[in-house]
Image (spheres, rainbow, N blue to C red):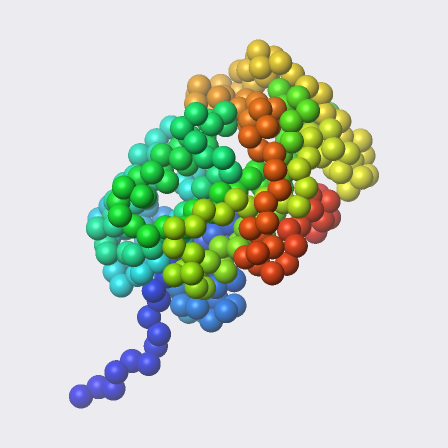
Length: 288
Protein backbone atom coordinates (compact mmCIF):
# COMPACT_ATOMS: atom_id res chain seq x y z
CA UNK A 1 0.00 0.00 0.00
CA UNK A 2 1.37 3.44 -0.93
CA UNK A 3 2.30 5.94 1.74
CA UNK A 4 -0.19 8.80 2.25
CA UNK A 5 0.88 12.11 0.73
CA UNK A 6 2.44 14.57 3.14
CA UNK A 7 1.67 17.49 0.86
CA UNK A 8 -0.63 20.03 2.47
CA UNK A 9 -3.67 20.58 0.28
CA UNK A 10 -4.85 24.17 -0.19
CA UNK A 11 -7.96 25.34 1.64
CA UNK A 12 -7.73 28.88 0.20
CA UNK A 13 -8.52 29.87 -3.39
CA UNK A 14 -7.43 33.21 -4.84
CA UNK A 15 -8.99 34.89 -7.88
CA UNK A 16 -7.35 37.57 -9.97
CA UNK A 17 -3.78 36.32 -9.47
CA UNK A 18 -2.82 37.47 -12.99
CA UNK A 19 -3.80 41.01 -12.01
CA UNK A 20 -2.27 43.64 -9.80
CA UNK A 21 -4.23 43.08 -6.59
CA UNK A 22 -4.84 39.33 -6.74
CA UNK A 23 -1.22 38.80 -7.75
CA UNK A 24 0.00 40.75 -4.75
CA UNK A 25 -2.18 38.66 -2.44
CA UNK A 26 -1.07 35.37 -4.01
CA UNK A 27 2.60 36.30 -3.61
CA UNK A 28 2.12 37.26 0.02
CA UNK A 29 0.32 34.00 0.84
CA UNK A 30 3.10 32.04 -0.86
CA UNK A 31 5.71 33.94 1.14
CA UNK A 32 3.90 32.87 4.32
CA UNK A 33 3.92 29.25 3.20
CA UNK A 34 0.13 29.09 2.83
CA UNK A 35 -0.97 26.68 0.05
CA UNK A 36 -3.46 28.15 -2.40
CA UNK A 37 -5.40 27.39 -5.54
CA UNK A 38 -5.32 30.11 -8.18
CA UNK A 39 -8.58 30.49 -10.13
CA UNK A 40 -7.70 31.99 -13.51
CA UNK A 41 -9.05 32.19 -17.04
CA UNK A 42 -5.65 31.28 -18.49
CA UNK A 43 -3.61 28.90 -16.29
CA UNK A 44 -0.50 29.50 -18.40
CA UNK A 45 -0.53 33.13 -17.20
CA UNK A 46 -0.83 32.27 -13.51
CA UNK A 47 2.17 33.20 -11.36
CA UNK A 48 4.52 30.33 -10.55
CA UNK A 49 4.53 30.31 -6.76
CA UNK A 50 5.49 27.68 -4.18
CA UNK A 51 2.44 25.88 -2.82
CA UNK A 52 0.17 27.29 -5.54
CA UNK A 53 -1.67 25.39 -8.27
CA UNK A 54 -3.71 26.99 -11.03
CA UNK A 55 -7.22 25.95 -12.05
CA UNK A 56 -9.10 27.24 -15.08
CA UNK A 57 -12.38 28.90 -14.06
CA UNK A 58 -14.14 32.01 -15.36
CA UNK A 59 -16.65 33.72 -13.08
CA UNK A 60 -19.64 32.99 -15.30
CA UNK A 61 -18.70 29.31 -15.80
CA UNK A 62 -20.44 27.82 -12.79
CA UNK A 63 -19.47 24.23 -13.57
CA UNK A 64 -15.77 25.10 -13.85
CA UNK A 65 -15.87 27.19 -10.68
CA UNK A 66 -17.61 24.40 -8.78
CA UNK A 67 -14.97 21.89 -9.89
CA UNK A 68 -12.06 24.22 -9.14
CA UNK A 69 -13.27 24.83 -5.59
CA UNK A 70 -13.42 21.21 -4.47
CA UNK A 71 -11.96 21.03 -0.97
CA UNK A 72 -11.67 24.80 -0.59
CA UNK A 73 -12.90 26.50 2.61
CA UNK A 74 -12.10 30.16 1.89
CA UNK A 75 -12.17 32.14 -1.37
CA UNK A 76 -10.61 35.53 -2.03
CA UNK A 77 -12.75 37.22 -4.68
CA UNK A 78 -11.45 40.17 -6.66
CA UNK A 79 -14.21 41.89 -8.62
CA UNK A 80 -14.46 41.02 -12.32
CA UNK A 81 -13.25 43.40 -15.01
CA UNK A 82 -15.55 46.35 -15.58
CA UNK A 83 -18.26 45.38 -18.05
CA UNK A 84 -21.97 45.73 -18.63
CA UNK A 85 -22.61 42.27 -17.19
CA UNK A 86 -20.18 42.32 -14.28
CA UNK A 87 -22.92 41.96 -11.65
CA UNK A 88 -24.31 38.90 -13.44
CA UNK A 89 -20.82 37.39 -13.48
CA UNK A 90 -20.46 38.06 -9.76
CA UNK A 91 -23.78 36.44 -8.94
CA UNK A 92 -22.97 33.35 -11.01
CA UNK A 93 -19.62 33.02 -9.25
CA UNK A 94 -21.10 33.47 -5.77
CA UNK A 95 -23.73 30.85 -6.50
CA UNK A 96 -21.05 28.40 -7.65
CA UNK A 97 -18.96 29.14 -4.56
CA UNK A 98 -21.93 28.31 -2.32
CA UNK A 99 -22.79 25.17 -4.28
CA UNK A 100 -19.18 23.97 -3.99
CA UNK A 101 -19.44 23.96 -0.21
CA UNK A 102 -17.07 26.87 0.40
CA UNK A 103 -17.58 28.31 3.86
CA UNK A 104 -16.09 31.81 3.73
CA UNK A 105 -15.90 34.41 0.94
CA UNK A 106 -13.55 37.39 1.26
CA UNK A 107 -14.76 39.94 -1.27
CA UNK A 108 -12.99 43.07 -2.51
CA UNK A 109 -15.81 45.60 -2.48
CA UNK A 110 -15.81 49.40 -2.64
CA UNK A 111 -15.86 52.20 -0.09
CA UNK A 112 -19.40 53.41 0.51
CA UNK A 113 -21.01 50.58 -1.48
CA UNK A 114 -24.74 51.34 -1.54
CA UNK A 115 -27.71 50.93 -3.89
CA UNK A 116 -27.73 54.68 -4.53
CA UNK A 117 -23.98 55.35 -4.45
CA UNK A 118 -22.90 58.21 -6.68
CA UNK A 119 -20.09 56.12 -8.18
CA UNK A 120 -22.12 53.82 -10.39
CA UNK A 121 -19.82 50.82 -10.06
CA UNK A 122 -20.14 50.97 -6.26
CA UNK A 123 -23.78 49.94 -6.75
CA UNK A 124 -22.61 46.67 -8.34
CA UNK A 125 -20.46 46.07 -5.28
CA UNK A 126 -23.42 46.64 -2.97
CA UNK A 127 -25.59 44.17 -4.84
CA UNK A 128 -22.75 41.65 -4.88
CA UNK A 129 -22.44 41.97 -1.11
CA UNK A 130 -26.18 41.42 -0.77
CA UNK A 131 -26.00 38.32 -2.96
CA UNK A 132 -23.17 36.92 -0.86
CA UNK A 133 -25.23 37.40 2.29
CA UNK A 134 -28.29 35.81 0.67
CA UNK A 135 -26.21 32.79 -0.39
CA UNK A 136 -25.63 31.96 3.28
CA UNK A 137 -21.85 32.26 3.08
CA UNK A 138 -19.64 33.52 5.85
CA UNK A 139 -18.10 36.70 4.50
CA UNK A 140 -15.58 39.46 4.96
CA UNK A 141 -15.91 42.62 2.86
CA UNK A 142 -12.85 44.74 2.07
CA UNK A 143 -14.24 48.09 0.95
CA UNK A 144 -11.40 49.87 -0.81
CA UNK A 145 -11.29 53.55 -1.60
CA UNK A 146 -9.94 54.50 -5.05
CA UNK A 147 -6.51 53.02 -5.69
CA UNK A 148 -3.63 55.44 -5.18
CA UNK A 149 -1.98 53.90 -8.25
CA UNK A 150 -4.98 55.11 -10.28
CA UNK A 151 -4.32 58.81 -9.63
CA UNK A 152 -1.70 59.30 -12.40
CA UNK A 153 -4.16 57.83 -14.89
CA UNK A 154 -6.46 60.81 -14.28
CA UNK A 155 -3.89 63.14 -15.84
CA UNK A 156 -4.32 64.07 -19.50
CA UNK A 157 -1.47 64.39 -21.96
CA UNK A 158 -1.42 68.13 -21.27
CA UNK A 159 -0.75 67.54 -17.55
CA UNK A 160 -4.28 68.42 -16.47
CA UNK A 161 -6.81 66.45 -14.44
CA UNK A 162 -10.30 67.36 -15.62
CA UNK A 163 -13.55 66.30 -13.99
CA UNK A 164 -16.52 67.41 -11.89
CA UNK A 165 -14.95 66.63 -8.50
CA UNK A 166 -15.16 70.16 -7.10
CA UNK A 167 -13.30 70.39 -3.82
CA UNK A 168 -14.40 66.97 -2.64
CA UNK A 169 -11.89 64.56 -1.15
CA UNK A 170 -10.87 60.93 -1.55
CA UNK A 171 -8.68 58.79 0.71
CA UNK A 172 -6.70 57.02 -2.02
CA UNK A 173 -5.37 53.66 -0.81
CA UNK A 174 -2.27 51.76 -1.92
CA UNK A 175 -2.75 48.36 -3.52
CA UNK A 176 0.09 47.01 -1.37
CA UNK A 177 -1.85 48.07 1.73
CA UNK A 178 -4.99 46.35 0.45
CA UNK A 179 -2.98 43.20 -0.27
CA UNK A 180 -1.43 43.27 3.21
CA UNK A 181 -4.88 43.65 4.76
CA UNK A 182 -6.33 40.84 2.63
CA UNK A 183 -3.42 38.55 3.51
CA UNK A 184 -3.99 39.19 7.20
CA UNK A 185 -7.65 38.24 6.80
CA UNK A 186 -6.91 35.14 4.73
CA UNK A 187 -4.26 33.96 7.19
CA UNK A 188 -6.88 33.81 9.98
CA UNK A 189 -10.24 33.97 8.19
CA UNK A 190 -12.35 32.87 11.15
CA UNK A 191 -11.23 35.95 13.07
CA UNK A 192 -12.91 38.16 10.48
CA UNK A 193 -16.26 36.50 9.78
CA UNK A 194 -18.98 39.10 9.24
CA UNK A 195 -16.55 42.02 9.24
CA UNK A 196 -16.61 44.94 6.81
CA UNK A 197 -13.37 46.90 6.60
CA UNK A 198 -13.08 50.35 5.02
CA UNK A 199 -9.58 50.43 3.54
CA UNK A 200 -8.24 53.95 3.01
CA UNK A 201 -5.01 55.83 2.74
CA UNK A 202 -3.73 57.98 5.62
CA UNK A 203 -5.01 61.26 4.15
CA UNK A 204 -8.09 62.48 2.36
CA UNK A 205 -7.12 64.66 -0.61
CA UNK A 206 -8.77 67.05 -3.02
CA UNK A 207 -7.72 66.67 -6.64
CA UNK A 208 -5.91 70.01 -6.30
CA UNK A 209 -3.84 68.44 -3.51
CA UNK A 210 -3.33 65.22 -5.48
CA UNK A 211 -2.17 67.27 -8.47
CA UNK A 212 0.35 69.11 -6.28
CA UNK A 213 1.73 65.76 -5.04
CA UNK A 214 1.96 64.50 -8.63
CA UNK A 215 3.77 67.69 -9.63
CA UNK A 216 6.33 67.23 -6.87
CA UNK A 217 6.90 63.56 -7.64
CA UNK A 218 7.00 63.93 -11.43
CA UNK A 219 9.05 67.09 -11.55
CA UNK A 220 6.57 68.78 -13.90
CA UNK A 221 3.40 70.72 -13.31
CA UNK A 222 0.14 68.83 -12.96
CA UNK A 223 -3.03 70.85 -12.41
CA UNK A 224 -6.67 70.12 -11.66
CA UNK A 225 -9.37 71.97 -13.58
CA UNK A 226 -12.99 71.35 -12.54
CA UNK A 227 -15.57 70.53 -15.19
CA UNK A 228 -19.33 70.56 -15.02
CA UNK A 229 -21.07 67.22 -15.37
CA UNK A 230 -22.21 68.24 -18.85
CA UNK A 231 -18.65 69.15 -19.87
CA UNK A 232 -17.38 65.85 -18.48
CA UNK A 233 -19.78 63.78 -20.59
CA UNK A 234 -19.05 65.90 -23.68
CA UNK A 235 -15.27 65.63 -23.30
CA UNK A 236 -15.44 61.83 -23.04
CA UNK A 237 -18.09 61.17 -25.68
CA UNK A 238 -15.51 60.92 -28.48
CA UNK A 239 -14.13 57.66 -27.05
CA UNK A 240 -17.18 55.76 -28.25
CA UNK A 241 -17.63 54.03 -24.88
CA UNK A 242 -20.99 52.48 -23.94
CA UNK A 243 -23.28 54.52 -21.67
CA UNK A 244 -22.48 52.48 -18.53
CA UNK A 245 -18.77 53.18 -19.05
CA UNK A 246 -19.32 56.91 -19.52
CA UNK A 247 -21.41 56.95 -16.36
CA UNK A 248 -18.63 55.19 -14.46
CA UNK A 249 -15.97 57.59 -15.72
CA UNK A 250 -17.94 60.71 -14.85
CA UNK A 251 -19.22 59.40 -11.52
CA UNK A 252 -15.62 58.77 -10.45
CA UNK A 253 -15.45 62.54 -10.06
CA UNK A 254 -18.97 63.26 -8.90
CA UNK A 255 -18.53 60.67 -6.15
CA UNK A 256 -15.53 62.64 -4.92
CA UNK A 257 -17.53 65.87 -5.14
CA UNK A 258 -20.36 64.34 -3.10
CA UNK A 259 -18.07 63.57 -0.17
CA UNK A 260 -18.74 59.82 -0.39
CA UNK A 261 -15.01 59.03 -0.78
CA UNK A 262 -13.91 61.27 2.09
CA UNK A 263 -12.79 59.95 5.48
CA UNK A 264 -9.71 58.17 6.78
CA UNK A 265 -10.24 54.81 8.45
CA UNK A 266 -8.01 52.77 10.74
CA UNK A 267 -8.56 49.31 9.21
CA UNK A 268 -5.28 49.25 7.27
CA UNK A 269 -3.05 49.85 10.31
CA UNK A 270 -5.22 47.57 12.48
CA UNK A 271 -5.03 44.67 10.05
CA UNK A 272 -1.47 45.14 8.80
CA UNK A 273 0.34 46.52 11.88
CA UNK A 274 1.84 49.28 9.76
CA UNK A 275 0.64 52.77 8.80
CA UNK A 276 -1.28 53.28 5.58
CA UNK A 277 0.92 54.52 2.74
CA UNK A 278 0.65 58.18 1.63
CA UNK A 279 0.06 58.94 -2.04
CA UNK A 280 3.48 60.57 -2.38
CA UNK A 281 5.23 57.39 -1.31
CA UNK A 282 3.10 55.23 -3.62
CA UNK A 283 4.07 57.44 -6.55
CA UNK A 284 7.72 57.52 -5.53
CA UNK A 285 7.94 53.77 -5.14
CA UNK A 286 6.26 53.26 -8.51
CA UNK A 287 8.53 55.78 -10.21
CA UNK A 288 5.53 57.75 -11.34
